[in-house]
Length: 228
Length: 107
Image (cartoon, rainbow over all chains, first blue to last red; front, side, top):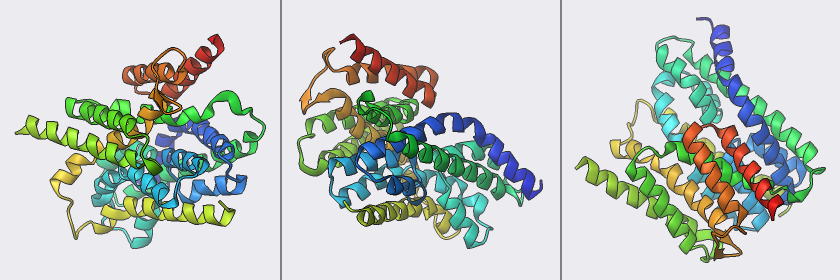
């Protein structure tokens, strides 16, 4: 496979996902403006942070006036799942020069990983395999920039009472529910949700971290009992 | 926050996100993550994202509210059912918004 063919294969694998990503990017732009973020900063977040659900959360936390350290921590918590993708693609990229590893790490999103990984696993020894991941990553990056730019441009014209900030919980539901395929995972969600509701009055949303830890502990305990 | 402060905040969040994505790619050949870490990583998004979502759905002005007046709770249930059945992001978001607007319109 040539580099060009591999790149185009990656782009083609990602294209259907842009159907879901484009409206999401537009809504992000609108929500960011409604949180009081200036249009230029809202657009630049898409290249500086480049992580859809984290950008939503960050925009809403800015709107709520949360402390900076908490915002960085929350973004880290949400994006920690990308470490799993990093571990998964690492063997395929091991032979590449550092500049390629840096570029592909920046482009390593849920969608790019999901689009490219079947092809990477099918041809792990192709010397051009990294071009597949680059094709998927670049296609998503480009689509995300265009969609958020559109959202920032039309956002000012939309009425504020559409409840568009509801897109964040809906997105998280769309991510989390399909992940729940076992009792320990269900327990992690239920405990985390319960503790978050009970501790919501704690200052600076610190209850979120306690709740996430409670969910992890509940899941870990049940999983340990199942495998023991 | 000023525009400069916002951009600095974006940069900090972006660097952290990049570091997470680069972590095991950079370490490949020098370090293998322990098995328990790889096993537990999938629980992180479940616990973290549910902690953010549950209060948004269940609380109105800080009080638990599962009555019909809380449209977000019922719209969230619709979205959860759609996500469980079809595992489709766009369909989940679309059905949640449709339910929210319908409930708000009925009230």
